[in-house]
Image 1 (cartoon, rainbow, N blue to C red):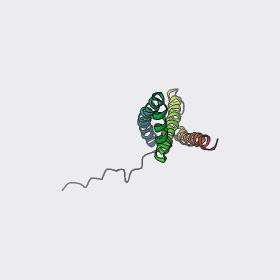
Image 2 (image 1 turned 180 degrees about the horizontal axis):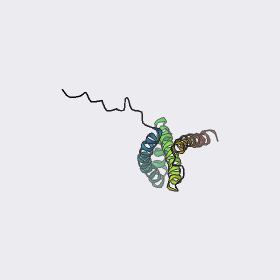
Image 3 (image 1 turned 90 degrees about the vertical axis):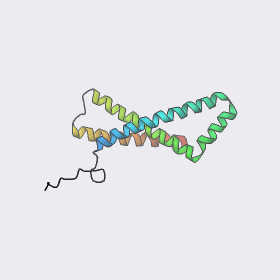
Image 4 (image 1 turned 45 degrees about the vertical axis):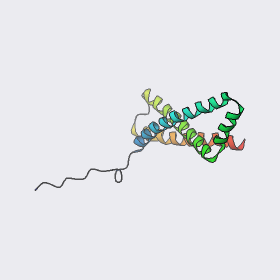
Length: 126
């Protein structure tokens, strides 16, 4: 009779470490930014087409769903930027110790949240 082999941990049991989650998120925000850049190009084309087309584009953007898309784009932009700066620091050879990797990951998340909150505060309150 064969030995009972242990089950391999799966995502319901295994918890990904913070650096792995941040790496996956960095890749996902890159995809979001690529898609959002196409939408930005469409907005610029609407601007060039004239006032009627631009008014339609602005109506779409001002809709609550359009605002959610813009908010998601800004979150992706700031997170990707902050994490890119983190990677540039790693390319210099600093911050590669495990404690520093976790600390810079938490700083990246906090900075992205603060920058997003600052942008949307300026948009809505100034």
